[in-house]
Length: 259
Ligand SMILES: NC(=O)c1ccc[n+]([C@@H]2O[C@H](COP(=O)([O-])OP(=O)(O)OC[C@H]3O[C@@H](n4cnc5c(N)ncnc54)[C@H](OP(=O)(O)O)[C@@H]3O)[C@@H](O)[C@H]2O)c1
Image (cartoon, rainbow, N blue to C red):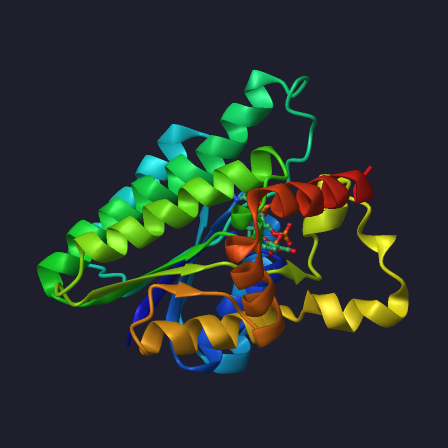
């Protein structure tokens, strides 16, 4: 039976990955800070799908917790076939006043921890000649909307570079750049997600299950980058090809809409 390790498996997109993979018969290792939340997800999936689910309480802003998860990924007796680097949170403080501590936390959770885990997975999987690493970044990576965009741009380039390094090793690496997903994310970040009229919401928000399905399909096809839904793929493409001055205007409007 294949095993997947998912960070941030307690709610949102990570839980959607857990449900889909358990339905497909994968055993799981779920990691996040919320032990009770993880145990609840684990017990549901064990009873519905009969898969094995291990829970590892981890705060990825703590380097020691990331290193412990990395050791789990490299345990030769309990191989992990798929890593989903998903844990993350919104950070939209003005750059001039954002505390160094908050910036460091964002970089640790969304850049350094995924890099530590991806490198551990890469070593173990390359040795076995197979495996998959999925890094959840964001469509924001192509904008100039502040710390979150910058952190996710780093994660995207990291992922795409690792994919090049591991080409022909049998290990697939995919950067997933979702647009807006209706999860706990916006509420937790204190972002005004209701700036859109309710009627427009289905046009801009992507269901978490759809992100998961398209990500796993892209991984199976050996793609290295995936922007779920044609609508968001077109938006990301546009942001990359329009003049920088127009990208700045769109970025400024988006930043203003959050406050
Ligand atoms: N929602 C969107 O619109 C959107 C768009 C593009 C990309 N993304 C990205 O998608 C990923 C999943 O986000 P989501 O939308 O599912 O948000 P969410 O519902 O808020 O879930 C975030 C997950 O990350 C975990 N997490 C946060 N900080 C952590 C830490 N210090 N240590 C360990 N786990 C931590 C949380 O678990 P605990 O609280 O249990 O620790 C939770 O399971 C993130 O990387 C996010 O940046 C989201």
